[in-house]
Amino acid sequence: MSVFLNNLEQASALLKAGRLVAFPTETVYGLGADAGNSVAVAGIFKAKQRPSFDPLIVHIASFDQIRLVCSDLPDVARKLALAFWPGPLTLVIPRNDQISDLVTSGLPGVGVRVPSHPVALELLQLVGRPIAAPSANPFGRISPTTAQHVLQGLGESIDAIIDGGPCQVGVESTVVSCMGPIPVILRPGGCPKEAIEDVLGFSLEIAQPDPKADDAAQASPGMLSRHYAPRTPLILVDRLAVAYPLPGRKCGLLTEGTRHWSNGFDRIEQLSDTGDLRTCAARFFAGLRSLDSAALDVIIAHRFPEFDLGIALNDRLQRASAGSIAGEGGLQLQHSESMNWLPA
Ligand code: TXA
Ligand code: MG
Image (tube, rainbow, N blue to C red; front, side):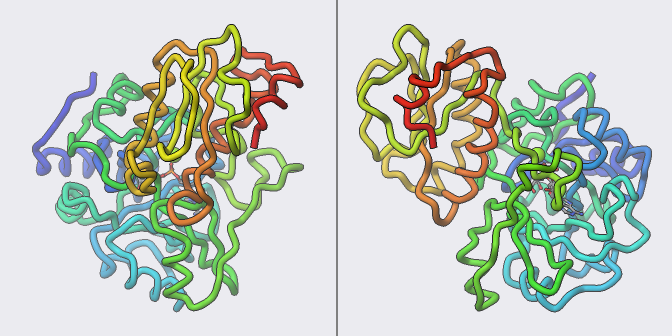
């Protein structure tokens, strides 16, 4: 039975004893375990029902602790860490042997970051060792941005949840691999691509999943086609077409808020009054959850502008929508219907 726990000393003692503790970060809530304790780390995979090929991000209290996880620090990683930590940037760097193989899924690199949430930082300082923490949700489902979300998804299978209020950034960290000669973005996220490029002085590629490889064989693990998914089918559109919502179907709309829509949706989640991408990101997963619990037949979502945090939001929408048009999740859309909707 899980408990809310606001005593960080107790939470730290639980982590040191190999137990699982969910805690707030500025991006999303994480499900933490001692990264050097393989049994504890195995508990994360079990609680989340996460496949073992998908590596976990390790959290440290400050840049000074980086030697606890890595064998060698590439110059580019040092530069990015000094520019963006604490904050929503994960760097994949050569790992050392203190980190459980399970954490890295046997890969030579470890993903590491210093979160900026004060509760996370205090907890990490108290524990004094690296903490592996994926998002605290069942694998493939919508990420948690409140302690209640964690309770709903994983309440039965973890030891404690620290409630630090709603997450301010709202999408997961940007993951940058520094393992090759040129850094590459493995996952767009809360640290904008443009800001990273400004620091580096050159532009970055976002690694694309190989459409021919299955999930376990992707060049970059975690590039799953379907992820962050509501149970309700989700259709991602560039713009709303003339005839909407879908006749005879209960439709929800997830929108940034500055574009026009007609009435007739059963539920609308407008993420911001002004279209501000930071506000949209902070409310994104909660908005998706709220639509998912509204007994709708389908969720229609607008593509965000493709810059700043819009890149991360579009990435999440793309994965949330994968499979929906093919009918996964129970809704079979006719070809003509999907054409009407101008799916992105
Ligand atoms: O914002 C965040 O990053 C949150 C909070 C809790 O810190 N954590 C998070 O973890 O989103 P998770 O497990 O949901 O995402 C981990 C992803 C993997 O799927 C993979 O894409 C990438 O990060 N990753 C982690 N370690 C890696 C490694 N060693 N090599 C390559 N990619 C890695
Ligand atoms: Mg996740």
